[in-house]
Length: 154
Image (cartoon, rainbow, N blue to C red; front, top):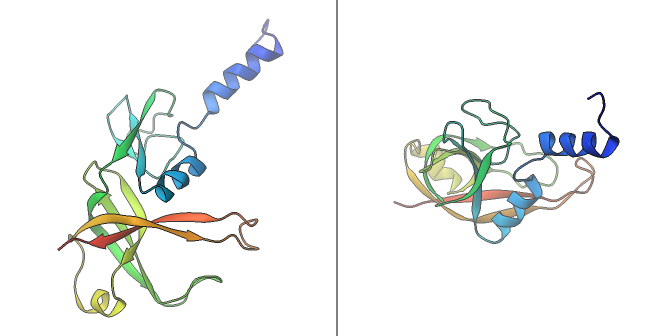
């Protein structure tokens, strides 16, 4: 960095560490009924929610494309939360959903807890049905969180 002025150094740092899709932007898209992802131009993998590196090849997201996901996918894993953190009402179901585009998204699953206990849901098709907005509290500096909710399609 010798011979560079402060503005050049700051511009390089901003470029190197700029998130292509911030969590705030991702959350706002969820509120609008959309799921956004980041497509790696190195390997083509799609990552959602946003990370600073590709989840497949670990390439930093400097050369990227923001894409809209279809909101369709399948349940890869799920669990029932019986003892929830403060501010959440248990029981509820959370799942790891693999979208048709390949991104793995942690999400709420809009399904009856009894059904989730009795029926094996892994492999079942789901679709994005909207967000759940969790108000800020003392544990997250008052920042609201927005999580996707998926519903069974069949």
